[in-house]
Length: 479
Ligand code: NAP
Image (cartoon, rainbow, N blue to C red; front, side, top):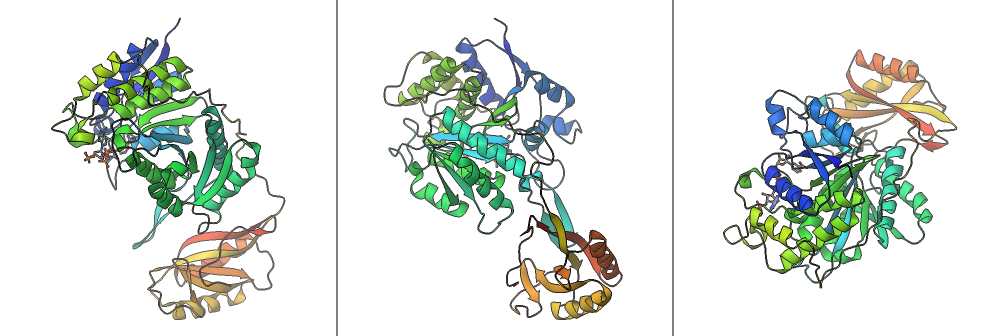
């Protein structure tokens, strides 16, 4: 039988130790894998490759379509992009699946409650598109992009994943009460698709309450599907419920491509010390085996991990680094336990995930009618709203558009503004047609040009009405 090729990226910091452990254990199951070693992350940045991902790594992933990777160190703040995010985006791995479960011997305040849940995190959209601009020298902006297609993909995948693992419920966690158009898109998509999976219970939970409920009663959750940033945060939280990042695996899934990695980072302070817990990468390997259809081997590794922990082989992250088993001994013990089965803990019987087929059309949802009813013209100004407002009104006197209001960071400050608002230099000036009619984009741009002769325009947005519904939200205090 021909060997299946897998690209293996050892990664930075503790990455190589964790990945070697997982590779040794997987090899010991007898599954035939041809590991193709490639690199990304810090050593690649050091070679001057700004993406952190060299071409031969990209070529290898394009060929194998399967990756087991260690964590990659990311420079913080300015400079290079995260090589992890680059990999996820390059291969459009739109779903990040992050399961956690209670493990034997890993005592936490939640032990005995049977936590066994999965966060399904949208992986390529949201604020993590990383589209940021300084709007003024002292106001930064990050675009939160949520598409109808992206929402459909992640929601369908969450339900398909739940079905493949025989899970009973899917909760959708969003901040749709505040971000009605972006987070609301995911919620509406969830509510539309959920009835197609009648055997799975579904409900919506606001993300902050979700965090609260996860700490209070985590066992109520089975699958949680959410947007990128929400998922990033709550999945670190869920890993802490079962003993920490050392036990939290993940899969990044796209159409026909999959990258398996721990949730944790490169924890550089532990690198090379043979003390780090490799379980998260080993369990990521279990997820990879299931994805490959190697269910028997996956089950064998999962049981071997459970038995190894039941035997009391705990590592420094659980019992303190002066008392823990070493990474290499822990790996040997798991290998030695292959074939044994835990009597107290069960392993889920999984079936292959039915990947949703979603149209690749760029225009995913067509509008019957789309009109422009005004424009938000953003102005950089040090003027107080009570002066800026009349100035804009006089500039717009000849335009078909009139100034409806000015808001500062989302709260109306003109007319009849709230005097308590501590304004910054970035004003959203909302113009609408004088008689409530639709306008052309040229009308908005012409007005912006005219305003720019007196003030500094820093951004322009159309106010769309799509199929009769407003495609924009109101400011706090706007009628
Ligand atoms: P981190 O590497 O995940 O480490 C944070 C803490 O988590 C560690 O100090 C350690 O806690 C614990 N920890 C992490 N992995 C562990 C393991 N295998 N076993 C036991 N404990 C473990 O997070 P970070 O320090 O914020 O990030 C370091 C670098 O990793 C950054 O450059 C970051 O950008 C990158 N990163 C990469 C990925 C990825 O490749 N997917 C993900 C996240 C972060 P204690 O100190 O309490 O022992």
